[in-house]
Image 1 (cartoon, one colour):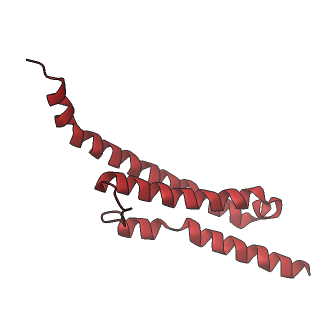
Image 2 (spheres, rainbow, N blue to C red; image 1 turned 180 degrees about the horizontal axis):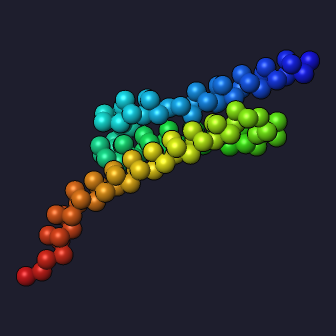
Image 3 (spheres, one colour; image 1 turned 45 degrees about the vertical axis):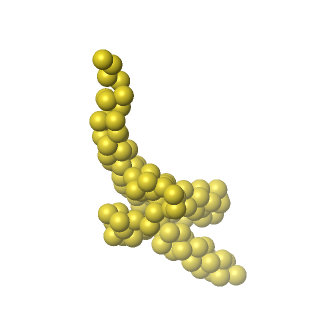
Length: 115
C-alpha cells in the first residue's frame, strides 16, 4: 500500500514538473505570443506572461501545501525550476514595461509642452 501511495505522489510531482517546465513554450512563443482580445500588443504580452506565471504559481503552491509532497526530494528540484522560470517571466515583464514606457515618451513630452 505504501508503495502505491509513493508511486502516486511521484506521478503527481512529475505532472507538476511538466507544468513548471513551460519555459520551452515560453521561449518559443515569446516573440509572437497568443494575445487576448482588445489588448495592445505590449499589454497582451504582459497579460500572457502573467497568466502563465499565475498558473505555474498555483500548481507549485498546491504542492507546497501538501506535507508529503513537500518532503519529497523531487519537490526541491521543482522549486528550483519554479524560481528560475519565475525570474524569466519577471524579466520579460519588466522588458515589456520598458518597451511600453518608451513608446509613450513622445506622447507625454508633447502633452507637457506649453507655448
